[in-house]
Amino acid sequence: YPGKMDHTTCVVFKVGLVNTLPNIPIEKYVPLSVSLFTTDDHVKLYCRTIAKGKLECFAKRKSCVLRVRPQIPFEIPDGAKVITDEISSEITRTIEFPPEVRIKIHSRDLKYERSAGVLIIQFDREK
Image (tube, rainbow, N blue to C red; front, side):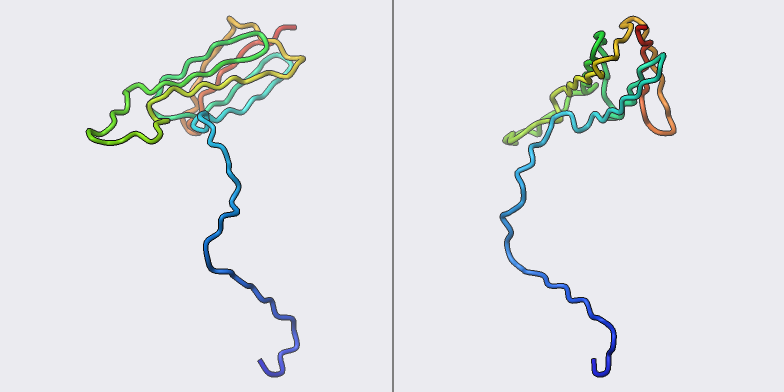
């Protein structure tokens, strides 16, 4: 542009196949997201998972094992060749607590926060 006095930005795109993407492993527990919070009195797990699943919680003093199973099994269409099937399998995830945190395993309290779609699992802490 004749007479232009400011700087110009140039963006260049290379068109073609790219084979440099990283090989990222897919974790089976991706549909089970968990946030862990602690207070002086409680340990809270905020969980979001599949809508039509059964969530089980197995408490240990230093960790919590979460398992989600589909309520209704997924049926493979007739004549289909299965390449991978993560929908039919259960999702298991172990949440380790920080080393200084111990829970009372029989103090579990469950709440469902409908507005956020989050299940809250709360345990009392050992003193």
